[in-house]
Length: 166
Image (cartoon, rainbow, N blue to C red; front, side, top):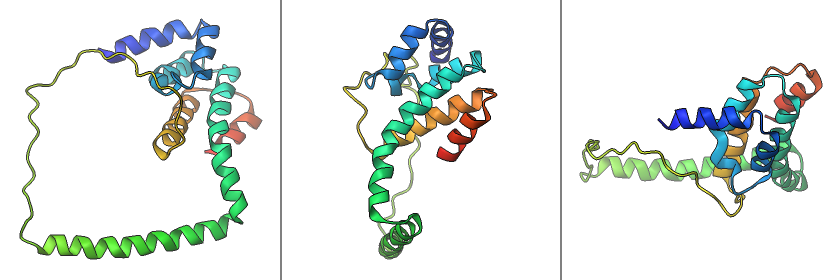
């Protein structure tokens, strides 16, 4: 049922460019309309301005993160340093997992009770702003990827720029 509502919202937004732009520009609504934005790209496959708006929104949030990494040095050096940190954490985690597996306090998994499942449509979440954290950065990139996938723009320069960014 939720998908049907999203479809009709997207169908309406494909023609109401002003409202669509206000959703894209609004940090409080943008992440909540990810499915609708994907559908709009499918309805208007050649709408370069729409793709460019989504790309600009995503890029603006990643610019801060990319600038922070540029200050640390080369990409290769950053990747090497981060991989060393991850290797240390994994080594520590492996030892902890081995100890847990050897203990006799292993609980058996329980099945979820789906008898109380409620499929009512929920109101869109309104955020004060898009917080700068890994979950939201992933959502921003996810929206860009889904919108790009549904589009069919003919601008090779924009296509290359988006793919390089992803």
